Length: 203
Length: 298
Image (cartoon, rainbow over the protein chains, first blue to last red):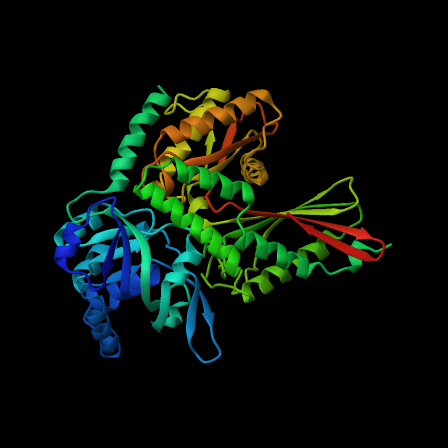
């Protein structure tokens, strides 16, 4: 078990290997389908328009050495205008595969958190940047919500509660490195082993 | 004597939903505890089970959802003769909306064409409900909260299956169930409970496969051949080594439950309802005792 603080240095990222259990601390941002599509269309593949410039600058600072969490939380809206996370487990990451490498490169992301693993393009991006894929425990929504100590702000709430970009401060958020910056992926290894066993069982 | 058609069961349904969303059934928690003990010290698999078990305890303590994807609420209602199922359906819809307001459910019903979220877990044929008349004098309700991740890896096969060398027999069933677990890897939030239906048409087969998920893990199939296949599939699916979340490990499946239906001579469907470790099922019995309404949860 290792504690890692965000922003994460390249040296720390390179020291992480698949199978490592990590507790993340610091400020990160949630982002799933609509958020990734927005970043690609408004910041990365097209010229940044004046109305998006302030958010772009904010994210460039927030995500430099930072982490995006694939998550659509259950949110409590308090009377004083603040928010808190009620349940906040990871969502399936593979849906972001088409966007993830560009988002990692554009913002110098050091990690993405989600579940189910990602594909070859993201694995390559993890080697190039360097960065890693952190696997959270799917369904551990109440526990992870407790690790969210503060909801600092929300951007793009008009995308809907699950799809908005929530900026959160976490303490000891438990994850496992399942894709590292050296080209290794637990998902590939486990699938290959299970495929062998499967062939025996149906021989 | 009271009349089921004159009472409003909305609050009882809200409590049933709250229990399902926030309290994992005891047989599931026991099985997860045993699975955690089996994994190697310091492994990612052991860590995953520890996190799962802590989360289960926390959700129960704070009355918050075990998983933020509170899924499709599926209601199976058994009722005596003369009960208005239209009224019961109204109460279930009202309860889904109230449970959403109280954060037991995430707003999860989206218009299939516009993508607009109804905001309260009601909509066209949402939640899912099935009503069955029975001979007893009381109402019995089973509810299952079936998340999207595991629903996406559920599967239907038709036998024979040349790729898997599966014929129209229980060995064919064994092959396709193994294949479904193999294909799912960790993506359906393993370890799973598998509800399997053999026979029926494509639609009835999927419904039957989900109904198997209401059986307790220790429940043994009355049919000896099916009981033996359930045991064998439990052993063999775990030999695949997928482990919790697909991290690799000794436990990939916590239980296999198989049901059968009559089928056409021309068809042999096998449906596999893959349920994540957060197998959120709850039950309630509603009885009339004179003018008193008695509600029991399990």
